[in-house]
Image 1 (cartoon, helix red, strand yellow):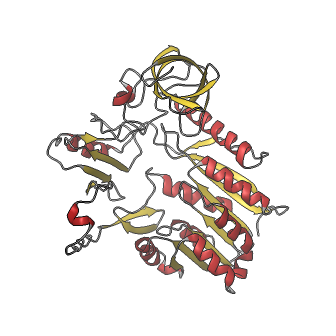
Image 2 (cartoon, helix red, strand yellow; image 1 turned 45 degrees about the horizontal axis):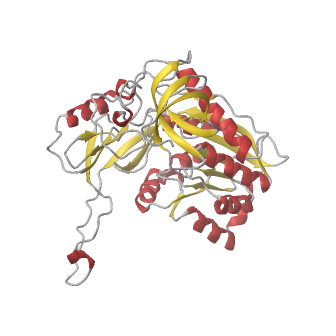
Image 3 (cartoon, rainbow, N blue to C red; image 1 turned 60 degrees about the horizontal axis):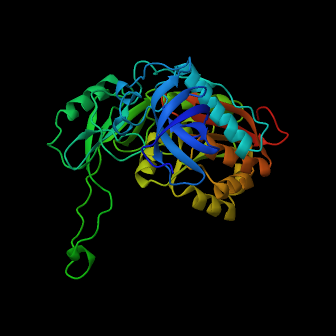
Length: 431
C-alpha cells in the first residue's frame, strides 16, 4: 500500500493544467512536481488519498531532459527537501523557451477538450522580464513563530528564503529586509507593492483566517463594534500617456509590463471594429484599463462594470475625460438588468471586453453577453481551462474565436494570459 513519504520511480510523459507533470505508476496517474516531460525521476508521494490519482514531488532526477536548467530560484531546487521549497516558480527549472512550449501544450489540450476543437493554440509570446525579475507585487507570510517568507509550494507553511529572484530589485530588497525581522512580527501577511513611482510600499495585514469564536463573541453580552478600516493609500500606475489611480491594495497586473502589453493587444484585436455610435461594455473593468482602450479606439459610449465600489470610484476619475459611465455591480446582475431594459439593443453594434477572474465568466455571463449581440468580443483570460469552457459556450451561441493570442506574463510559473477575439460566426474583418 502506497502512503505519503514513499518513493516512486516515474517516467514523466506530459504536463497538466496547474504546472505539475504527468506520470503513471501501475496504471494510476501521478501528478509530479518539479519534473519535465521525457524525464525519469524519483519522486516522494505527498498525497495518496485519491483513487483516481496521486501527487508526488521530485527528489532526484535519474534521466534529465535537455531542457532542464539550474532553478531560477535556488531555494526551490530539487536538492532542497520538498517541504522547504517556496512556491511561485513551478517551471523555474525549465529553459524559458520550453516553458512556453509546455504552456502552449496546456492551452492546446484545454481548447481541444473544452472548446470543441478546431482552435489552434498560438505561440506564447515573450514580453520580457524573465531574466531580471518582473514581479511588482509580492506577498509574504508570518507564522506563529514570527518566521517571515513565502508559503512552501502547495501548502500554507512559511519557508524563510534568502532571495526573491522573480521580484523587481527594489521589491526583492524590501523582502530581504523583512526577513531580518523574523521573530519580531505578528502572525499574518505582508504585501509588498511597487507602483510606477518606484517606491515600495509595505502593507502589513493581521492573520485573517477564520478562528473559533470565544464565549464572549458567540453569544450574550454587548456586541463590540468593529474598528473602521483605514482608507488605503491611493497610488498611480501608468499605461502610455494615461495615469490610473487605484488603492495600494487594489488589483493591478503583477508583471511590470503587463498592463501596457494587454492594452496594446486588445487595441490591436479590436482595431477597426469600434463603431463610435454604438454602445460598448467593459465587464470586470477594475479601474478602467480596457475602457480607456475602447476610448482610444474611438468609442464614445462606454460603460465599465466592476463589483468593487472603490475600483469603480477610481475608474470614474481615471476616465472622466472620456465620459465613461462607471457602474458598481456584479457582471451577471448588470447584464440581466441591461437585457430587461431598452439599452441592451444598443450593444448589438458595439464591442464588449471581458476580463473575468480566474474562474472565468461562466455560462450565465457568456449567454447574457451573446444575447446582446455585440459585433465583437475581446476576452482576456488568466486561466486556459476557464477560457476554453467559455469559448465552447460562445461557440454554441454563434460566436467563433477569430483570433487568439497568448502572453507569458508570468515567467517561470505555469500561469499565462490569453486573449481571444470573438465575432458572430460567418463574420470576419472590421466594422
